[in-house]
Image 1 (spheres, rainbow, N blue to C red):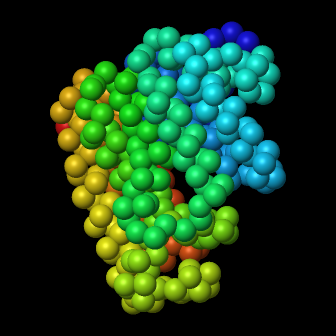
Image 2: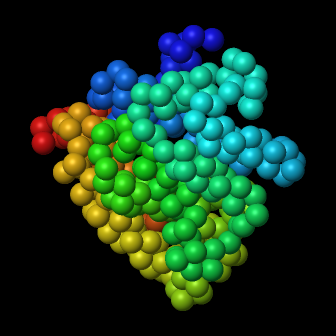
Length: 281
C-alpha cells in the first residue's frame, strides 16, 4: 500500500466516523490534515477494539500489539493486521514528519486497556486520570502536528472534550457496562445507577449534569488558551472542533440533560456556521 493510499483511507475513516473532527481538520494544510487523520484513525482503532465484541483476552492481545507499535520509533506492519494496514502506514509516515510522542500514543492504548478492567470511577480525580489517557493523550499527539509546545493546555482541552463525550454517551456507555460519572458525585446528588438504567431525567439528574457541564466548560475555557500558541490555520482547526463540542453541550443543556434517547445532532449548516465564525475571528 502506498503512503498516499494509506492517508486517503485514514481521511475516509475520519469523515465517516468523526464528522465533528473532520470539519475541524479540513482547514489545515495537507500534511497536517493527513497527520491528524492518522492520529484519529489510531485512536479509533483503540476504541473499536476496547468496545468491540471480541473476548477480553483477544482485546488485550490486540491492544498490546497497538501499544508495541506506538512505542516503536519505526513501527513495522507485521505487528498488527498485516502488511496492508493503512492506519499504521499513515501513522508511520506522519511520525516521520512531525514529533508525535510515542508516550502519548502508548497512553492512549493504556486507556483502552483500562476500559477492559475498570467500569466505575470513585471520584473525579480517578476519572481525570483516565481522561488524560484516552483524550488528553490525543491532544498531546495533535499539538505536535500543530507546531506548539503548549502540551498542558492541549491535554486540558482533550479532557474537556472527553467530559462532554461522557455526558453525551451516558446511555451508550451504560449498555457497555460502564458508568464514567464519578460514584461519589452520583451519591452526593442522589442519582442511582437505576436512574441511568431506566433513563430517569429527575431534578437530581439535572443538578448532577449541570455540575458536570460547568466542569467541562472550565476545562474547555482553560484548554482554549492553546490557541494563543498556534498559527492561524491550526488555531482555526482547534477552535472549530471545540466550537462543535460546545454546541453539543449547549444542545444537551437545552434538552434538559435528557441524553437517554441518543446524542444530539448538529446539522451541516450549524457546523459550517461554526467554521465561518472561526474564519471571522
